[in-house]
Amino acid sequence: MQPITEHRMGICFLLLIVGFCWAQYNPNALSGRTSIVHLFEWRWADIALECERYLAPNGFGGVQISPPNENVIITDPWQPWWERYQPVSYKLCTRSGNETEFRDMVTRCNDVGVHVYVDAVINHMCGANAGAGNHATCRSYFNAKTEDFPAVPYSALDFNDAKCKSRSGNIENYQDVSQVRNCRLVSLLDLALEKDYVRSKVAEYLNYLIDIGVAGFRIDAAKHMWPEDVKAILEKLKDLNTKWFSAGTKPVIYQEVIDLGGEPITGSEYFGNGRVTEFKYGAKLGTVIRKWNGEKLSYLKNWGEGWGFVPSDRALVFVDNHDNQRGHGAGGASILTFWDARLYKMAVGFMLAHPYGFTRVMSSYRWPRSFVNGQDVNDWIGPPSYSDGTTKPVTINADTTCGNDWVCEHRWHEIRNMVVFRNVVDGQPFSNWWDNGSNQVAFGRGSKGFIVFNNDDW
Ligand code: QV4
Ligand code: CA
Image (cartoon, rainbow, N blue to C red; front, side, top):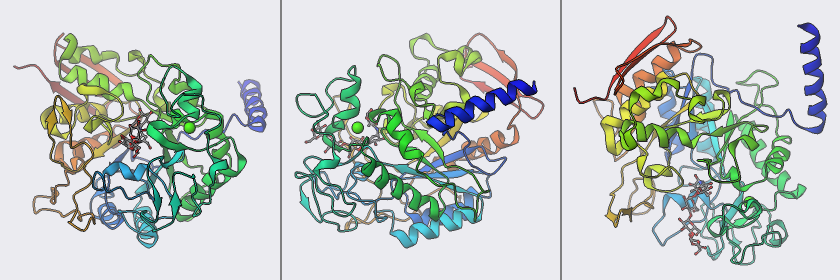
């Protein structure tokens, strides 16, 4: 065996020189902590408290946070959640808090062993129609029309306009790979990531966060970037802060690539950089648990790669995310959310019991859904906030649930208990499957755990 190992290491070393061995798949959570939670739109001050009072004591490994960098303030509609996906600079002030609060959160979460994963919006800046002025969360000046972002600084030379070959300058055809990566996603000004200058500015931002103590990144809109451009940025990244991580630890990377099949761009193209989001997971699980298309729980016997998913150690999985819980992004109507609480708990319970993938629990806020022709016309509404636009704090009720319209799915006791279950059975094999040929199933995790699901009507 020895010569083979050495041979492999040799190949890896060779590949390293040409840059193929960067990838970081290890979630960098404390050992025995196997899930993270997305605290969507939470304030940094509330996340710091939640790490200390709830996430650490209940064995959560980390938190995915909303984008921490400066974004455009949109007033029509009124401060939608999605304004945070329209960067103006890499300064750390947003509706979630300022840099001081951000640093305090990262320090306090790390100090109790809960790590922070940043949603990194690096494919683009704001929308082409975002105007000009200082209507941004740190008051930086920008001009979307002239593509001027002096607070970075980026100028028109740093965007992809010349490379984009679509008629409108937007992505019009997802079958055309170069359009998907060189044109504007819903008019968002597309960065020229093949330029070393742009790569360096992005890496400078990510390294700044690494120095503060973050553990990794969700790479937003990775499908819209060339995998080699993402890699070139990752190669510029430092190891994690040794105050909390052992020397030589790289940031974990999970790339948002929506691959439901049917498009030329696949998740596997990005394995060389890190993990990818497996969107088939929530779409299929929702279909099964809703019993649509004749699906039943018994079909989950070969759940995972057997369903055409990416390899388990390359997958970041979730039942719903901040997009598809409100009809954005991918997945469609089958996606289960807190609005379907009973089925949702079953789906999240199944995800956390099953060994496939690295698991992310969603934590949402409630908004006034209003369907017109099957479309939620309120899908844009931002987090619970006061009339001056500031986000409401997450209050905690006497029964440990959350107030102020924060849903806190991660505190639902069925979900919280399954986070603990997953930690307890970590490393144990999937075993002793039983089903009734219908919607009653059960399985074990080695000698450490056993779980039963009944989605039949008896
Ligand atoms: C609209 C039109 C354009 C038009 C433009 C200009 O759609 O055709 O050119 O006006 O008038 C918002 C609006 C959108 C608007 C755009 C620009 O919703 O209607 O364009 O702003 O003004 C989030 C939201 C988007 C939002 C975006 C920026 O979901 O609706 O766009 O933030 O504010 C694909 C991708 C995948 C993506 C997913 C939603 O492959 O990468 O769509 N998911 C991620 C994030 C998601 C985020 C982005 C990417 C962009 O998870 O939250 O989009 O950073 O599947
Ligand atoms: Ca792009």
